[in-house]
Image 1 (cartoon, rainbow, N blue to C red):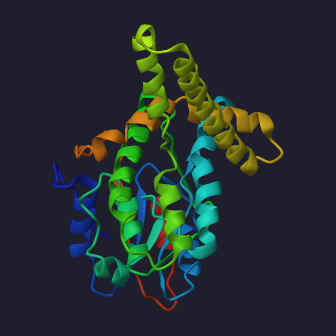
Image 2 (image 1 turned 180 degrees about the horizontal axis):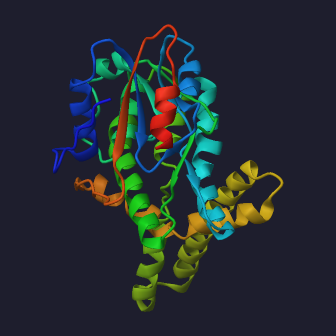
Length: 315
């Protein structure tokens, strides 16, 4: 194993990944990515390799599962898990999942075919998945837990991560949504994943604020109509999201409610944080002081021994 420490590297994580690709051994056929705050199961590498099937599968994505220390953290973790349990599971029916940046097994030939890791989005994982889908490759979602990481359970960390996901995914959506698609099912699955944390409630919310500011100059029937439509859109969005969560948590309505409330807490971010992308603004990648990245190049061994990997990850 070789380790490289890159300080202030251009394009941050995607730039570091592209550097790592350049120093990858020529015989390597796959790349496995794990964030350094993840503890992998002893059988993680073997599980990832055994999941390779169809030759068109360019990437295998495993759930970003998180560790928790108290039961009070469970609603936040369930909110994160909802993306995998609902969006990725549904997308897997057509091999239409997207990458999520860690616990990913990537075929090197497919990665090179789409130009490596994208540097034009702060969610380079979703952008890579979009490019692979557009190029006609499959992405498989394997719902087995092979590792657990540290969740951003503090409010500020949660909001900062959610802002980055919304902003970066909207960057990818602005390109992918208008690109030619080979399968409508796969295209719609990717679009639903890229918009999983966004909503259109910013428009009715601004209408309500506008009505409050201008109510002396607006006729009462018009005012009531705007109020009704604005509040109705809020309730429709809320009921639809709760029903979606309840569909996953079939026998746990209270857990579903708590999960929905965590999601609802970022309502204003989901309603407005994608607007700057539409207006052409750019956002730099925000470095985290606690997260680094581990990059493993897997060789084509006929009888490879995973004990070295197991000892490494135990350490």
